[in-house]
Image (cartoon, rainbow, N blue to C red; front, side, top):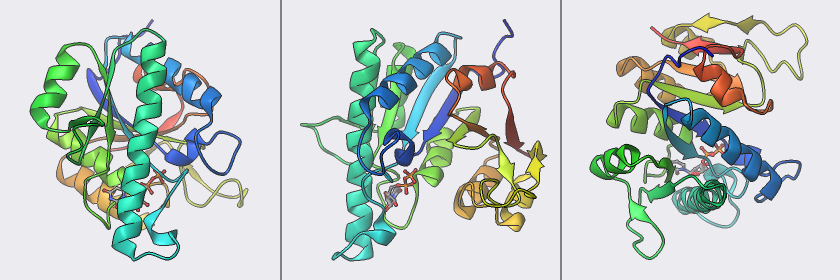
Length: 236
Ligand code: UDP
């Protein structure tokens, strides 16, 4: 088995994926499967920090009847529910996990601080970071890069439903070109929809590689960590 290249990574999971075959909510079999994949990845000797989205419940831009900032707050709260679901699923499988929130909510989970993250990782827990950056007008993609930079992770693994970055949506456009490698600047200039430009810009600024891969195949997180999976590396 190949030695993993990285020792600490941030895995970005979209909320949408947690809905499984449904268009809304949390699909338990999907959450259990992803929990298993995260545990398997950790067993390779890699510290795993997960930033979870909230698109399976609320996205600020499309929330009805509220302002954008309130919608974004609702979206950030949705990410915390997803973290709690993943935390429980990981712990049910016998691996310690800890949800940390960008907001102070002591009855629900601990606040994210760098010190808390380092402590829980040193104690062998998988971390689930909820609440995004804690600010409206950002995304959990940007959160993943921000947290990775803050806690000295070596890469962001961006889980999607396609096997890398394409010039257009490969499900709509059969002529879409797939990239094995891109620089951060190429990803920004190309306007590729896989991650927002703020996330790519922060990754460029902090020299963080982003690996875009498909989570659809069970075991793909571990495979990517061992250099055996198929994905696009956005770096340098
Ligand atoms: N959000 C926010 N600030 C953040 C992160 C997220 O306001 O730092 C809100 C925003 O409304 C976003 C929602 O939370 O639409 C859910 O996050 P995201 O869209 O990134 O989730 P995903 O698409 O990954 O499921």
